Length: 113
Image 1: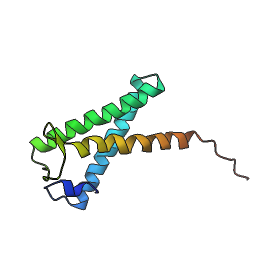
Image 2: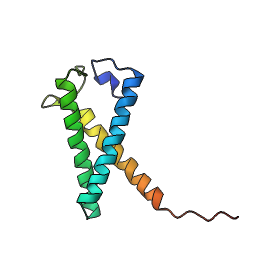
Image 3: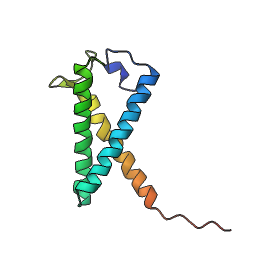
Image 4: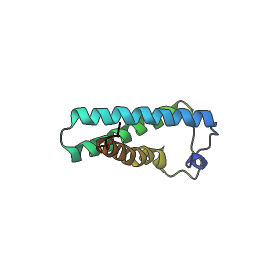
């Protein structure tokens, strides 16, 4: 939602939630692919971030060419694509997945019973 002023196309809350759901699906797919394809942990995170960037590029190209959205003049672009949406997915998803995976490995104390 914070990047909405960078778009010329008005989007409803529903459409933003759909985009967030798509980002979640792309994040899970990229994480699973990186875990399967790359053994070394450091390279796995790099691969994960690159897969997310590639996914963002593909989504932006398809959305722009299909007229689903357009950029405001304030959107910084590179090769006709917005820089903010291209870096937003890896910058947000990678730390979230890192925290989630570490939290899932933390042993829990046994509950008395």
